Length: 174
Image (cartoon, rainbow, N blue to C red; front, side, top):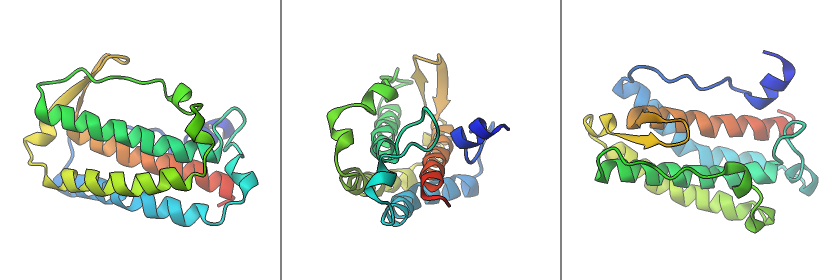
């Protein structure tokens, strides 16, 4: 992996497994649960300059990453809810880059960290209550034209949080 790839994917790329054990899914849910506190602890040390520093050339600033995480995880929560209440729903894709430029992404990231805490509390509560048959439900992503099972979505979003935490650690110099 070259340096740009290491900066882009500080924990490596996500690779879905064919299936997940209940222990693996519990560990993924635990990672989702822990993310807001890890993010909050890390950014307490950030200066205003660090918040507006990109983690790599051409990458988002720490502030944008901090606002992106709850946006993305809110969409994940909604996708899971749709999958539990509809048969293989076609989810609504969104333009992450455009969302990273909306006006509230210039605000103090504490707004998004607080939202991340609340969202993850509700999301983790839902995930811990899913039955094995619920985890086999899926949604259809129209952009990549793929069906995504909920167990894989949980693993992917556990990775996603750690992935962006890795970006923030780059800005922090850790």
